[in-house]
Image (cartoon, rainbow, N blue to C red; front, side, top):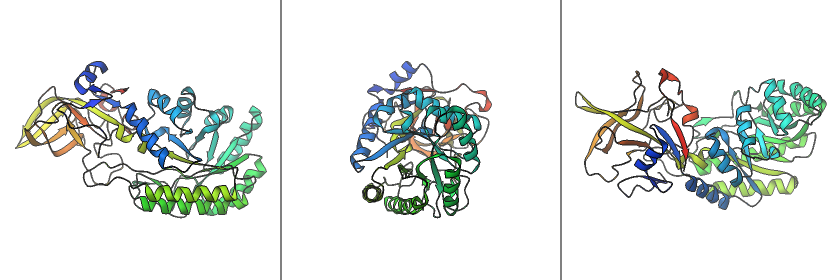
Length: 401
C-alpha cells in the first residue's frame, strides 16, 4: 500500500531516520515528502503514456512551493484552480503556455491575471466569455480559451464525481455548441476542451471506458468549434490505495485507452496536443504526516494515544474530507516499526471534538509519550486541505527531502 521501506525498526524518509528528520525540521507535527519517490512515480507514469501525450501536475493536490518547483521540470505543464495557484506555478518557472486554469468561480481579477500571463483558461460558464473578451481588449492580448465540458455520463467508482448529471463544474455537453458560437462572436481564441469526470478511481477498466467516452464526446463537439482543435485535457482521476483491501490501479487498460485517444486526435486533428492531469497519483504515496505522542490514556479498557497533531492538520485521515464511512489510513509508530509489543489503540489529536481521530482501534506497536505516529499516503490533500486555524493550535511544518 505504501512506497516507504517498513522493513527496519525506524522509518527512513529521503534517506534520513525519522527521529533525525524530526530534529532537523525542529518541530512536530510535520509533513515530509520524498523527492526520490515523486520522481520515480513520474518516471513510471511516463513509461506508460503513449509518446506525445503530455503529463500535467494538478497543483491542488499539493501546492507546497518547494514541491511544485521540484515537479515543474519533470512534467509538461501545470493545472491550477486559483490565482494563488497560478502564482505558485509561475514562480516555479512553469511556461505560461503550458498552464491550464480551471474552476467554476473565477473572479474578474483572476481572469485578467490569467489573460495577462498568457495561460489557457478553462471556461466553465457563459459569464466568463464577456469578462474574458473585455480583459483581452483592455490588455491587448488574446484570451486563450478551452471549454470545460460537463459530460453526459459519470465516472463509476470515483471518490468524487466531477462531471455528469447536474454539476457546478463545466458546461453541460448539450450546451457546448451554442457556447462555441458565442465564443466566436466574442472573438476569443479557442484552443480546445477539458473533461474531468471524477477523481480517486482504482478501477482501470472504468477509467479506460471514461477516457474513451470523453474522447468520443470531444471529437463530436469539435465539429462545431470556431477554430481547429489544438488542445484536449482528459483530466485524471487515477486513485491510490488508502485502506487495507484496496488494490492498486491497473494501468494497462488506461494506457491502452490513452493510446486509442491519442491516435484519434492525431488522425482528425494532427496539430492538437493531448494532456493528462494528475495530482494525487504523483505525490500521494510519497508523503507522510508525523505527530508526536503527548499522552497515553486508558479509558474503560480502550487505549488512546493523544498526539500534538490531528484533524486540523490532516482532515482526510480523520475521515472528514468527503468520506461517507470513516476508514483508517495506514498508520505506524514510525520509530518502533519492528516492535513485537502490539496493541489495539485509537490515535487522537489535541482538539476538543470527538471528530479528532487519526486512527481508530488499530493494531499498532505499543507507544509511549515522545514516540512518533506516522500517517502514510499523506502526500496529497493534506496540509492545504485542512482547517489549520481551527481551535488556534500552531500550524504544521512541511519539508521536501
